[in-house]
Image (cartoon, rainbow, N blue to C red; front, side, top):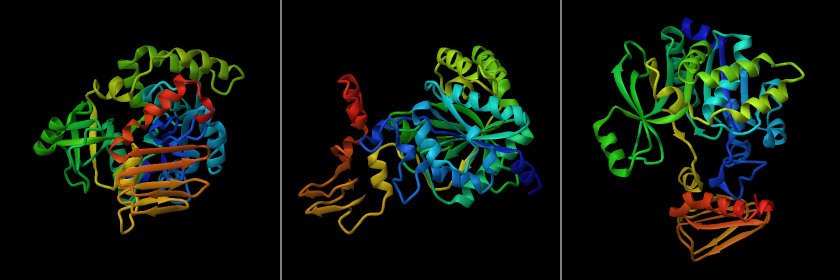
Length: 366
């Protein structure tokens, strides 16, 4: 436990909150995407994420990276965080530049600090087990100078997640299983996913990463040297009047690349800690339906709804009554002057609506 106490004191959290959440249209809009919505209960997914980490990380060590377009809603939802911990990307550049930018901030405070990187829009329960899992990963990052990911034990042959193949078991006397990582694997087709499940040793890639800030930046310098130079230029102007301009000019020009492609697929000091807490990345309205409480007819949803001869459906009423008659296996979501109606098995295609609205310049619905 001494190690964990030491780790907790220098633990930083980075919450990535810049996503657009297009599969959650019409509730998810440009100025208020999925992570800012209260899909379950009264607090947003982002607020739930902050609360989860605040049980073992102090608020002044929690950073959020988002886009400038979301500044208003982010500040409104995070009065518990110092304003200087809210970092705005001029433009989204995927996860590696995002993490690198936050690391520039945290490094100035503690280069030997350990950073936990988390998405902002995942549903996680068993917060105590989650904490224990993160601290086990932080211990590896601290003792072995490892870059650690949390792998979710797969429960079915999912095709919507990347996978991580484990190598040597290094658990020893630890309570939570731990491994060296053999490789990261792209999202598989159904047959390949079934083979992964059958063979064992494969985990879902949760998007949660833990590392010493210094170790991560060494990896960026080695595997993404141009980005490293650009991040150092940005850091040199932090706190100076010219910072916004420097950030805007340099960041717009950096390569858009994920941390998986940029670092995790190349480095050899990668480890995995097994995550057995309840986890859902809430990728679509279908995943919300599957997670939500159902009534006796298998229906779920929220707001003022009237469902007649309707089964196994998700219905959300924003500010009006939504009535559904004689339909099964559908998703209906009303928000302001927009309404979505689709079959549950077509929930992934909601992002096509957003693409068409953009193409038709119907920005009032975005």
